Image (tube, rainbow, N blue to C red; front, side, top):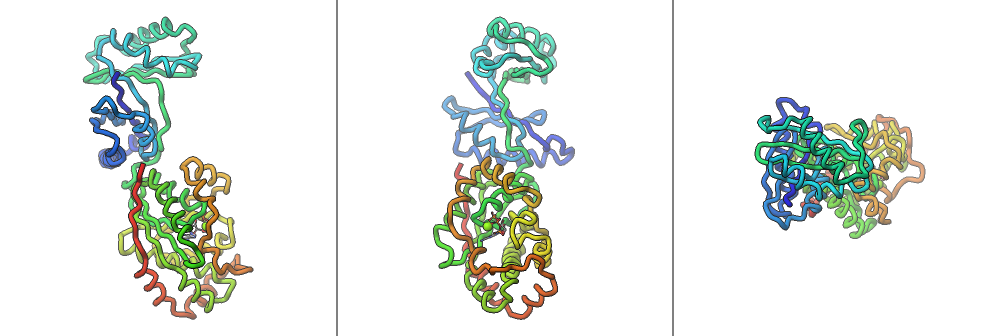
Length: 392
Ligand code: ATP
Ligand code: MG
């Protein structure tokens, strides 16, 4: 029994003249993802990528699991390869279909003929295979409008493919087709979700994390690295920038009005992140903020934060409730790590009464009253960069 995996494109199929470009990036990403899973033959036709394992002992379950985390694939299905003869289509496929048809009450057959020379037309293929399925699985009924299972036969140049089980792919567009973004990654629930969402739109993600030892621990940083590794299963390899932020926080505490501490801290975080963006040609910042969640995320506070930014700040969680963010985080597998109880630098020296409606002029005046530049430079110079690999 020989199986292939069919990856159906989502939006890439609609990309017109750019389609080839998107497709090549997708194929490159898929090949990289499967580099440790065996060797494969790849072919492309009709908005589908066909992946054929070249050795018998390939673990197809594992391959499908990996592919289900590659952006740009809308649907995945495993298909049986059979000889391109009606007799083989009818008889070699029954055991294979048994699993998919087991719990079903109804089915329909769908035939696609890429090879127009095949002697039977699509309706005839459907009729014959439908008949055979009914004989073999008498509990089933045909339902062409709302079947439990659709069995698809594709007649292609070399073989025929038969499949019945379709799985959802990760959707989106391939990572690497939409520029580069710097994710401000904390140890919380929201920022890993934000990174996942932007990567889903094809953006290649780097991550920056601010730590404040000894107020924050080594364990807290390891937790954030683990989150980066978890989102790397979707986003691909990530450059992880770890910024020593303690001194800046102490200088801020000693020199700025207490109620503006958080907002100035966030502006300095953005400033440092942008220095790396400029150096590495990264075009945007990404945060896990959501309007009104905490004092630093009021509209007024975000206006003051954005005024310190020279590049766009994307906040994909902006309109989401916490419960919605949590459900994405469970789906992508970051939730359990995010709720591990370690401290974040944002909670060090937090004022008792942060201003929820800061005016930009007072924030700018407070920042201008002290020369933070030497501390920014020092933090940038002492930042440690580490490559976090997608291990899966
Ligand atoms: P999260 O769940 O992502 O931690 P949050 O609700 O705790 O978010 P804040 O602590 O106000 O919110 O942080 C808002 C955003 O600022 C985060 O989503 C993240 O993008 C960024 N951020 C916060 N702390 C850090 C940090 N130590 N390093 C890097 N980015 C951070
Ligand atoms: Mg946080």
